[in-house]
Image (cartoon, rainbow, N blue to C red; front, side, top):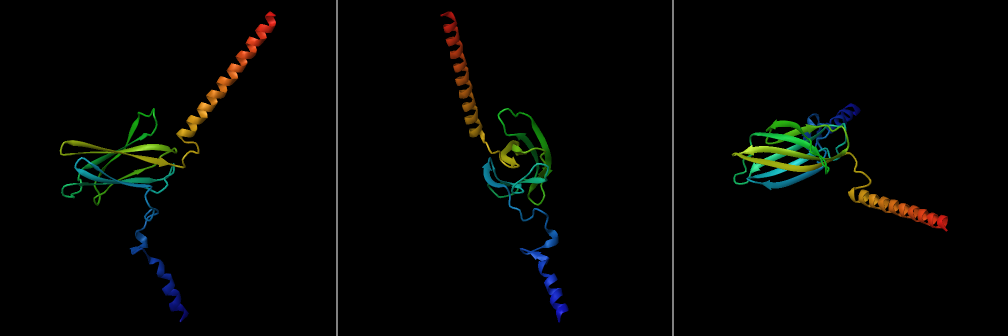
Length: 181
């Protein structure tokens, strides 16, 4: 009697949400860090970034779905994925890869060496027209001081510096006057 009870309890973990457990990867049930749907030209495009909180030196991926607005047929060509730093002075763009369709999805893996804000670009051409979709991607924890905090900090530092220089100048002028007198 106890043997049959043990065998039944060992079989309970075989399926998760109706899927066999052997088909699950480490991020199968992980929600995307973002999911955005947009319309560009003749296409509806949905893009997602996985995992929910991508980190430096860890594998992540971007998924793109593109289907025609008029008939819903998926785009069946190649999509080039590029990346660049999301900063004012970033001009260097790197190609992550060129992907072909796989089950109506374009998947591009990535591993970033450093934390930061990046722009992922997906490019393709259809009917002689170029299509380009840019979307932001944050790798790692956001900095505790954002752009507004940095700007306020720089302004305070400038004001303190000007104040110190003005005081120094006043003391020098006062010393010169007393020395002349």
